Image (cartoon, rainbow, N blue to C red; front, side, top):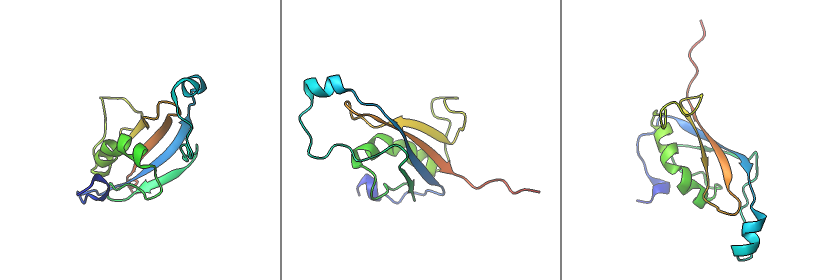
Length: 116
């Protein structure tokens, strides 16, 4: 079974938001072959992962960089690397495009505590 179609228990959906992209024009000029279609993810794009699955329109390469974190958040776990994030049920990750890396915010969509 591929990682995109796994059926592990995942009680929480996870929101994935593209926050910022950096471009290294000097590295691109030196090393990159011209691409017919470079990364199509844009800052502000957002998806929701259901049952820790890759949203259909999310770049498969970016997914492989974040999949482990999405699976953990979907399973109700958090606090990666100690007290790394203010929200313990979130993570900030990057895709591994060395020329145009995109930063993504991952957030478990946990139900709010009932108000009294």
